[in-house]
Length: 625
Image (cartoon, rainbow, N blue to C red):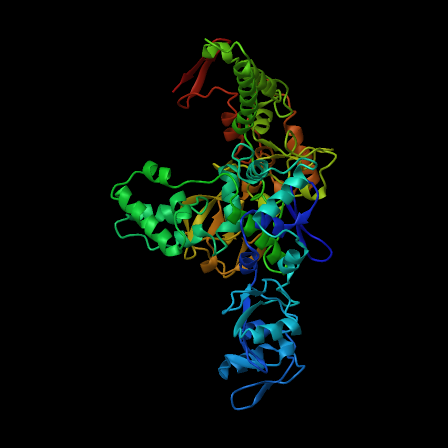
C-alpha cells in the first residue's frame, strides 16, 4: 500500500503498484463518511449567519500570519488590526487581552471557504449543502432563507494547514462505502464482474487477512511507536491513560502502562462506542482478573496484539503524511539502526520452514479433493519431503549459509559476528547506493566503522562492535553506564538506537575523580546523534569503554587512534588471514582483548585453574597447580 501526492497536492494511494486512486476512496471503503473524513484531518472554524453579516468565532492563534481582510476592533471600537495588515504575534496578544471572542465580518470573509458538515433545513429535513461544498453567494442566500444560524468550515491556510484531503474528496467520484469498494475491486481485477461477495472478500483479503501478511511483533511495535503512541486520538492511548482501579497492584499498573505495542483487549475496542464505556470495560476486566498476586500469563491472554492493520492504523498513516506535507513532523531515516534490524538464523530458517509447510498444506488439500479419499490415514496424506527439502536447501545453498572461515581464532570469531545487508530480502551489490554503505551516527557501539571488506561489498558487510548484542526484536543494542546527578554508577544498561537518541551520553574518557564524579565543567557528549558540550548534571549515561565503538579485529590493533582509517581497515582484515604460529607467544604490545578473543573463539582448550605446564604430548597436557 503506497501513498503519494501529485502536482496538484491531491493524495493518492496504490495497491501493489497498480493504478493510483484518490485516497478518500480507501477511507470510504473503510467505512468513513465524508463528514468523518474531514473531522479526522481538519480543525473547524465556527460562523453564525446573521441577516446582513456573519459572526466569526475567533481562535486567535489560527489568525497568525493571515492578512486581515477588514478592521478588527475591540468592543470599544479601538482598532487592533487594520485592514490589509498581516496579523502578528503582538496582534494576537492584544486580541486575547481585549477578550475578543467573536468578530462581525462581511459576507466576503465566509465566501470561498469549505463546509465541514452536511447542512440540513430544520423544518423540512432537506439537505441544503453537503460536507466539503464551497460556500458561494447563492448557497449563503439559501442558508439565510432556510434560517440556518450556525455553520462550521474547514480551517486551512497557505502556511501549515493545506486543504489536501478536501481537494482529494472533490476529485473522488464515489458516493459511499459500496461504490468505493467496487472501484478498488475494478482496479485490482479489471474485466471481472464485481459481485457483492467477491468485492468484500477481495477488500478484506487485501488489508485485514492474517493469511496474506503478518506485521509480526516487531512490525507492530515499530508501527505503534511511529503512529499510535503519538496520536492522541487512538483508542490505545486513551485507554493507556485510564485511572486503573486501586485494587490493580503496582506491577500490573506499570505493565499496562508500558505496553505501547499492544492494543488493549478487543472487547474494549469493539464493544464500546464511547471512551467512558471503554473505561468501564477495562476496569471490569481488572476486577475479573482479581489482580492481587496475578501472574503475567493471565494478563497476557487478555492483552491482544493485532498483527494486521486496522482501519484506524491506515487513517493514522495518512494523517502523518498530511502533517509532513504541512511541514510538521520528522521524515524517517532509512539508514538509522532503529529502522534496520538483524534477521538471525532462527528467523530465516523459520521462513523457509513456513514455505515448506505451505507446500505440504497444498499437497494435502489436493489429495483430499481426489475421489479415492476414503479410509485415508494421516500418514497417507502428509509427505514431509517438502519441509526437509526447504530446510536442506536453506542450509545447503542459501547465500547466507557460508563455510566457516577458520584460518585462525580471530577469523572464526569475526565470521560469527558478521552482519550483512545482502542475501534474500536484502540489497544487491549493484543496487546499493552510497548512503547505505556509509557510516551512520547510530553505528556507534553497535557496528564497527572500520572493519568492512574493500571492493564491491564495502559497507554492506559489517562486523558487530565489541559489546553489541541484539534484543528480542532484532535491533542492535550497546551497553552504557548510568550516570546519576553527575556521578557515574556501575549499573549497566543496554540501549537500542531508538532509545539512545533521547539521552545525553558522555564518552568513556571523560575525567572522573575517586568518588566517580565527573570533574570537568563541560563534558563532551552525544545527544540526538550530535556531539555537544553539556554540564555533568545533564549527563544521563556514559560509554563503558573507549573500544566499544570498534569490532574485535579492530580492537586488537595497538594505538588504533593513531592509525589512518584506511590502513586500520586493511589491518583488521589482514589479521584474519594470519596463519597461527607453531609456538604462540604473547604479543609485546597488546590491547588486553587478545586473551578474551582467543578464549571466546572456542579454538583453545583452557585449564580450569592456572599453573605451570609440566608435560605436553599429542594426547595430554599436564598442568601443575
